[in-house]
Image 1: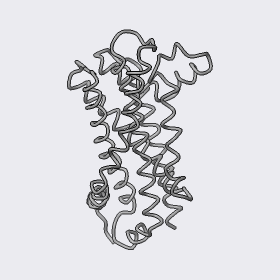
Image 2 (image 1 turned 60 degrees about the horizontal axis):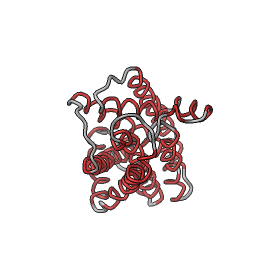
Image 3 (image 1 turned 135 degrees about the vertical axis):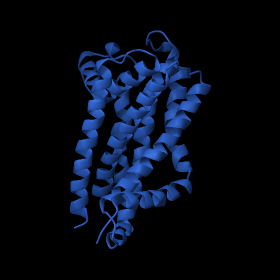
Length: 253
């Protein structure tokens, strides 16, 4: 049997996107929690938080974008688990298609859905007063980081979807990822945190990613933070992809 990996992925991605477009409330639900957090922190806590010059919504937005992605990938694990339980994978494997295309279809669907959610969140931030003088290259760099981060976390979601025993377990894995930005520079500078917490916040991936995006949007040179952020994103992506493929091969034997 011959297979066309790219063509198979496109067809299966189209199938997954149809499910998403039939339930757009999924995308809106993904954006609701981050937007609620942004409203709460800006209008309730913002006046009491010392973060330097500039509007707090501009300071807060990079972390909120990462929380949006962490919320969105839970649906990837959920949909993957349902496909496995429903026998869809067995049906696909009986066809002359590339087996990896089944997983890539879920991953690309997650990427597209998350990009839409991110646009909704940025739109609300603009209404709240967010402004950036960043040029096209800086915005492209921001989008590139967000895409890499989404792909990295989505492959983690694939592992959860393949290994979960229940539908609740498939999506529950995202809760620690949503919580991680709270122990980073997403909401307050890490210098205000006590010693052990400050050390953890300064050496976990979210802080470097948030700082790099924040500097790019503020027209500041991101320096080493940009490279550290890219290393984290690529490293998580590669490790998660390899583990996901190992889990997939074990599951479909």
